[in-house]
Image (cartoon, rainbow, N blue to C red; front, top):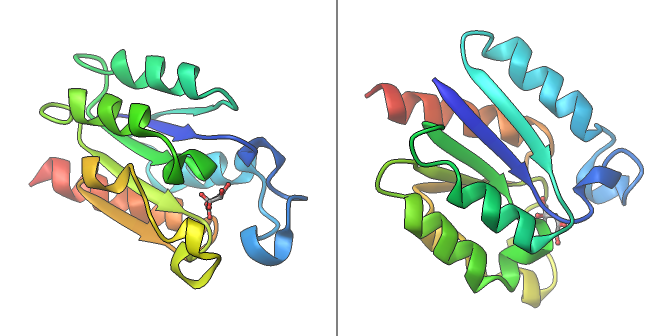
Length: 144
Ligand code: DQA
């Protein structure tokens, strides 16, 4: 099983970025955690601050990846393009959306996700551990 884990804008700054909201784990810590917990799953872990690059990566998943875990970060609330990209491959590459923070408990602009409708499920509020939960959920779904 091959899973693409995508991370959007500013998530490269995890560890020092508003740690009271996002926790102190770096993106590299989260990647290590996923590989430790699911050594039998091939995980390709990427981050980009560019919406275009994320859309291109999603479009290239057909026939290559079995599933996607995505934290679109701020693009969650603005990007119809990311939503369309996820929908374009959803028939063969299901996605799970993950957020470190509970966006519903934050500013109103963060309550709406444009990308969640293109995903099979969404997990939020558990900081870095949410990625582990998302991977477990996706592997469970793909193995069913
Ligand atoms: C985030 C929540 C978004 O609202 C925010 O813009 C982020 C991170 C999260 O993981 O909690 O960059 O996606």
